[in-house]
Image (cartoon, rainbow, N blue to C red; front, side):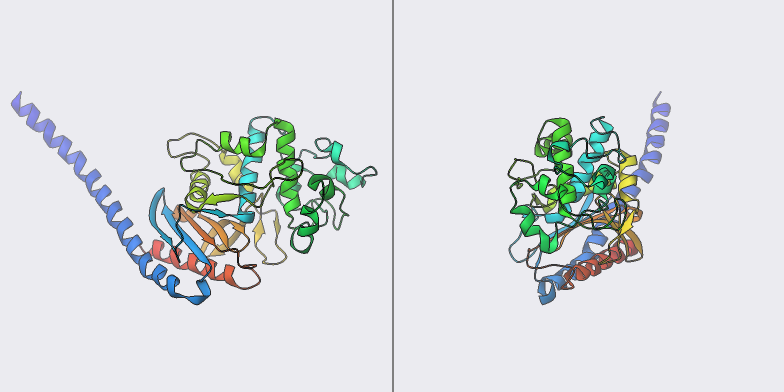
Length: 346
């Protein structure tokens, strides 16, 4: 009996040693990567060109490698993620489709929003689909940029957006417009008979760390789809991790279908400003030699996902200016490229 027990203990040690060695290697690799990122982020803290940067969080395969707050900011503080919230609206649409509240991206929007259609509607309104709104291919004049102010000053944002002239055919050129994602918020509200915030709290609530704070509403009480949403950098990371993990929470609960994530990341059009591919609420481009899917908000609110490296990176910034036109967004892309290089080397 004693001989059998000794043999059993020997076998257990034999099997446990490789596991312990593997765990030790992972811990050493994580520490090495975090250490490699430190000097780069130290340089960021003193770079005048990066002065708007508030926070950076880098996570790999669910492990936070490093998180930094700059100039008195913290990854736990709430920030306006601006148009990065368009990716969250896309997630809610995907969940609504899975729940049968919407039939799919090809569903026409006119029957859902018929009470807000113009008295003499352009026939092309009948051709706009859920997918057209998600990919910014509705064809209606843009309600972003110079037109944003007059749109949000109107008495009915949904009706105002639907009354705009067509500048392209539905399914045509990408016309980036926050009105498109706001129409999606209105559609979600109509089909569920609940607010978009309530849907987000219920459907994305199981994601550990996810939370939406303040969120602007239109005069009819519809939450603004795709802008003016407050979240912390950590909360945005939790949402990014959900997508990196195929729509599953850390404990394996499926929240967003993997198929919807694949559809959302599939290039459907391209930005005429940056040339980046655009899917359903997500941009895609090559950064640091890897394919990167990202949500992008005004001023430099960034959520990057690098599937090939199991990498999720969040950067939040001051709302100090248009990050594309002043070159700041490209600096953030460059910082991500450095992070990718450090992670790959480790």
